[in-house]
Image: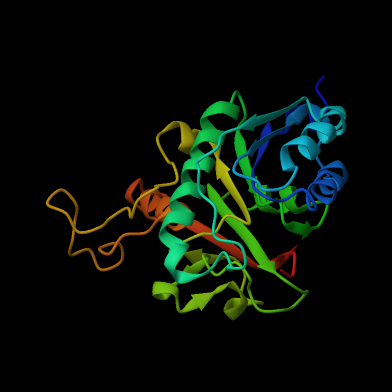
Length: 257
């Protein structure tokens, strides 16, 4: 007879990596502490355009990841994009290009790494803490797409403001204590997606999805202006009939950069 653990879903953790060598050891430690069986867990990393030794550090950590999982892979793909030194990554002038490249990186990693897994758990490399049972809590909701609340300190304001509803005016920290929250858009600091949705064509648009065009519903009240990357994925999910959800009281911690 199979044990309960042997019938748990297979989960693939995916993480794009760029200029993140200092975060990689902690990233691996968190995966090592994750409450999920090794034979039901895989990891895929994609490094590209780093100005530090991210690839070498990730490569050196692969043996640890392979001890903790049934499969761990490291890929590399350069897109030729870097924000000028000294300019913050959220600078408005670079947002469209930065997120377009990130969307391409996510899609490239997804297409190379996804095998027979049931779920994909996207985790940003600069998420520095989360509960060991975070995956169990996300899966327990039964939602096809769900995110936790990413903050910089426990109980603090939402850091990942790509998780929103009401046209960006309401985020997860606004709904603490109210249970699961319907979202119009999700971010990618930690994002759980049913793998078959990706197989069905749900990707991260590297262009404004829903932008006014003779072939697009330009008068749609929510998506008419178009969204990109994770928010574009949310818009695409809505067009596929899938609702995105957030858990305001399940917190993960992002590095204070």
